[in-house]
Amino acid sequence: MKKSICVLLSFGLLFIMAGCGNIAAEGGQEIELTASEFDIFALLILSPRRVFTYEMIADIIWNEPYDFYYKKSALNHISNLRKKLKINPEIPDYTKNVQHIDYKFDVPHTKE
Image 1: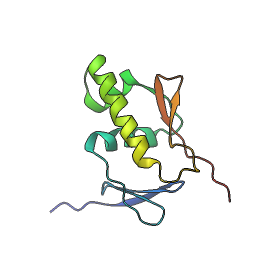
Image 2: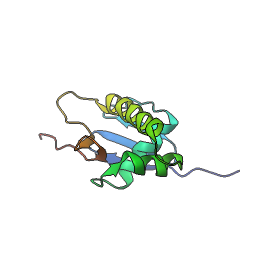
Image 3: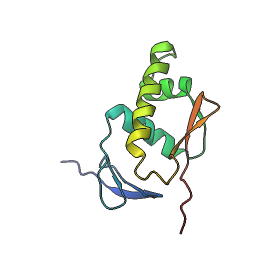
Image 4: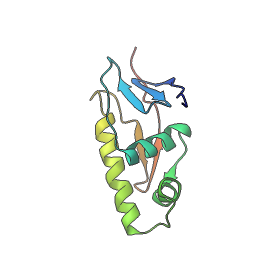
C-alpha cells in the first residue's frame, strides 16, 4: 500500500495540504476545487509571479493544442477558482490578470 505524504504550504490566508489535495482558508474553512481548478491552481502556485498565457495553460494542464475551446475552458476554470479563493473581501485576489490575456499567482499583502 502506497502512502501519501502531506506537506502543509501556506500562502497568505490559504493553506494547502500538498499530496492530499486539500485547500483550506484561515479558520479551517475547506475550499473545494474541481480537478481542473486544482491543476490550474497548482500550476500557478508552483511558479508564483510567473505569467501564464491561455495557450500555456491549455498545453500544460490538458496537453492539448490551443484553440477557442481551451481559452474558454481556462477562462471559466480561472473565474471559478478566483471566486472560490476570494475568502475575504478586504484582501486582493490571489490570481492576477495580466493585460487581460494572462494569469499569475501572487500572495496579497495583508495589514498587520
